[in-house]
Amino acid sequence: MEYFLLVPLLAFIFFLHRCFFSPSNTQKRLSPPSPRKLPIIGNLHQLGSLPHRSLHKLSKKYGPLMLLHFGSKPVLIASSVNAARDIMKTHDLVWSNRPKSSMADGLFYGSKDVAFSPYGEYWRQVRSVTVLHLLSNKRVQSYRHVREEETSNMIDKIRQQCDSVIDLRDVLSCMTNNIISRVNIGRTYNEGESGIAVKALLEELLVLLGTFNIGDYIPWLKWINKINGLDSRVKKVAKDLDAFLESVIEERVIRNKKAEYSAGEAKGFVDVLLEIQNGKETGFPLQRDSLKAILLDAFVAGTDSTYTVLEWTMTELLRHPRVMKKLEDEVRELGQGKTEITEDDLGNMHYLKAVIKESLRLHAPVPLLAARESMEEVKLLEYDIPARTQAMINVWAIGRDPLLWENPEEFRPERFLNSDIDVKGLNFELIPFGAGRRGCPGIPFAIMVIEVALAKIVHKFNFALPKGIKGEDLDMTECNGLAVRRKLPLFVVATPLSS
Image 1: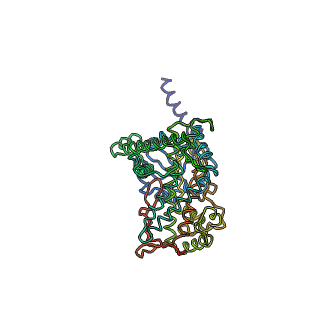
Image 2: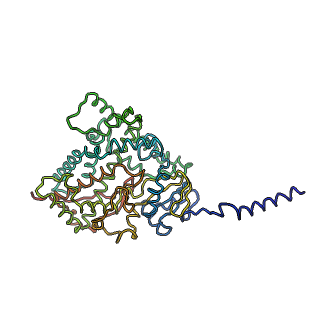
Image 3: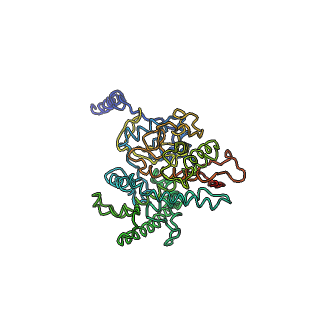
């Protein structure tokens, strides 16, 4: 009888201990504000077709740091400069991991590239290879002739179409594709070579990377990807791209054995990767799949986002004739008497640089930076964040924060004149390429391409919209993907300047 009386007494004592002495009550965990979630899907229904816009709207109600649940996964959305700085600088190491992505695994040889590989010794090694051997200042400068030749070819292409309406997106994408191809593999790839339509494959890969994969957030629903064809699309693109990369590598191996290089010719990324593959230079042997994954990274990172930035920039210039005129005056004055603008001229083009920064503020090519994952429990602002929580930074929202920018919806490059704010990841008001350990290592290369291309375009042509369309009538609808571009291509009429 005494035993049965003891059980409820012990339960009562345990209850009192939990209420008054438990750490969870004496030091209660503080979580970020969170919208109401639904069973199973969590907050997935609130993402919408353009998540950066939907999440920006939610942040106005729940604050600049909010906690959502994508299926079973907790995901922080950071929409303020302070939250971004805390994640990418103060606690950068804690947030340096990437969440597992079945899409990246399928397309990048088990996520063996720089962008998607998990944090650890392997990532440090491949990042070091990329930064020191592929994207160093010396290496970037060695490809100057490639940038200048292909931007000149772009000018010739526009000139040949001056009597018709020009699809500027097509012109810009061809230019960036050619630059990246020559830098990566030493030549431009021919459409349909070896039966492979490379450009179409890369575009499909970009679409897939921007596709929401429900299996990553609700694992027991991953079978849906077999029904809707997503799995088969990933496998086909991966197989065809692998065949292309294998053919490129074999071609370069044969050429390297024959030493078929002209004097002063810069080697392509693939040649550099082959040189360090045995680990003699780095002490890190580079496996074949890793080599291909890094090479594929270079194709993906350098094409879509670069021409997307240029297209948005030209769109804003056509919508704002005052800004276009001011840019034309600067470029043409500095380029007066010159046949062509070169990279040497860019240092004095302060307004051009301000125009590009303003375009990146309003139209970051990747408005939601790739998700990070915390490796341990961390204090973020005043909140307690458990390990294995994902975080996404809404740079689109930061670029429109009225606490940071006066009249944030207005396209006004003057805000960057006499300003130290740059896009290199040190100023968290403007981080279109990310920051910290997981920031994009190719920023200098991308910015150089954008600057020289825009300068040459403005130097050689006057631009107008076709059929009397007014700038304010331009459709600014976005199309979601890895890079958020205009839904409709930009069509223009170009008039060459008289010599």
